[in-house]
Image: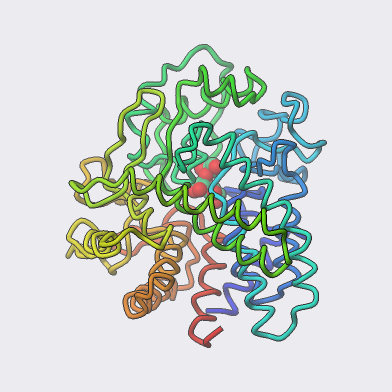
Length: 441
Ligand code: 2M8
């Protein structure tokens, strides 16, 4: 399986960066890159470092890392909304020089997690030289990125990141966003053609046309204000505090702190990073719902919680170093009939949305299927929480799911059927990391 996974990453390698998938996603995606670096680290630490540096070469002046860097050589009509639609450098004063163009959105910050894995693998191999140079180069960029998220994306100082679009969450059509998205009224915009449906077996695996219209309308509104964050905060119809994004930022801040130590960063910077992590944990704690046993997102525009039983609710576990009793309560929900204890599951792997959630759908994208990258995130979180046995079971079962050598984007939770795109880079990458864990790496 390791050979096959490495082969997928090799085939998706575009020379210094990796496309998210061969046909559905021919560009470089931000949070995919963090996971891909984790996998590449086991093949070639220098190449893994380069994956991150290539993405960060397109960091915005504000420190934002764009959610997509568009591949100028992607076949025409392969992805919508593509570079022509965003034309970011022309539209946005803070965008970097183009081409390549980028989107104006961002995604969860998995990058410091990837960078730290590169460093850990290099150290285990006693091959620290190149990796230390890489850490020195990436560290200030990561710091600017995290600072952007902790300031522009959290002017309230709540410890929770605000997103402007469901795409920023990475869990695009999760029921988490249903109510906030439904409140968005779509206005006049040029007609467009969805290209994503051409790449999957059935439209039921992807978001609906109504959801898509709202996605494109939100893009339109961001373009109209030239991505001015203050204007977005004032007028944008979709603003939400995202607990999973915020939890990934907490764990990424922990990783950044380790990197800061490795590169001998000034004390003031280390103190700043520690304070961010602490603030993030506090923010997550304030969103804990004892009723659902999960952490809940918050619709900031309408100032109401966004209750939904989804995998994002395990945010405190992802953040780690929990308040007393919280680990037990999160684990109780994870192993309850709402998630891993559901007897109809083909394998005990976490569905993206709980089957007990009325808006659950077993085949539709983020509304139910099992996503290997999120299983990896929970596995990693269990390891960090000292739950070694539970983590090991999850790892073995997750690898079993991939053993048909379908590195699919997502899987039907009741049948194990691979869905979405095949040969998805981040799936192959997490498989490599899981396999390496077997070898004690
Ligand atoms: C999916 O998202 C893109 C938009 O960003 C799409 O549907 O076109 C999501 O699963 C997202 O989390 C992921 O980063 C991206 C590429 O794998 O695909």
